[in-house]
Length: 226
Image (cartoon, rainbow, N blue to C red; front, side):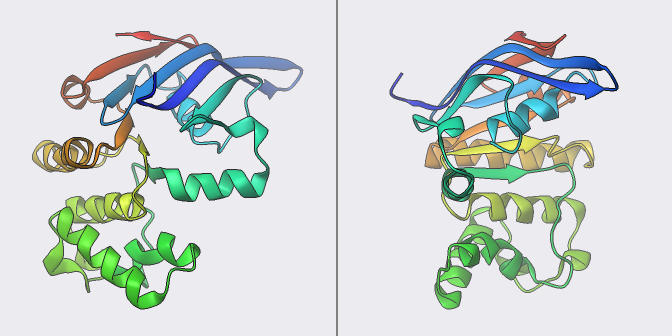
């Protein structure tokens, strides 16, 4: 489909534990469309994070292909793959991983700085993105001065400041209370609806999964509609 932002085909991945290979993914298929929010659910240790790492080009595949915007990650050099990640993908984790010595503004501007965007332009774009996630008044605060929900929204702003086609989120609401988790999830909804960003969310929260457009379950290495 022309609207497919991310396409994974027959992805398999195994890890070695001593002499034995432990299969984590077994021929997983996934297609995510522009503006679609897809939840990945499954038991703890089922390989959800491994799947996300494979989708984001952070881990190599044993077999299969992953394409972002029609570009096969396996056929790209490390440099080109890193550049594609910076341009087309955003990552959000359970822990915000904000740098404590930087303000929210400069944390969000960092991906643009990596692109060598001039500092003034990067900060202006970061300020605009922070405003989009409801943090216009918190731009000059450091992570320690922000609430848990504000830190996670800052992390989302950092993930989307480059205008990625797809955001991969690994338990983004896992450390938040119910109301804050709901508010953070609404940021993803707004992203998908207003910008057409594709969102893949790994979650153990059935309420978060239930608010997504589609839910996929990973069970014994196989991915299927829940």
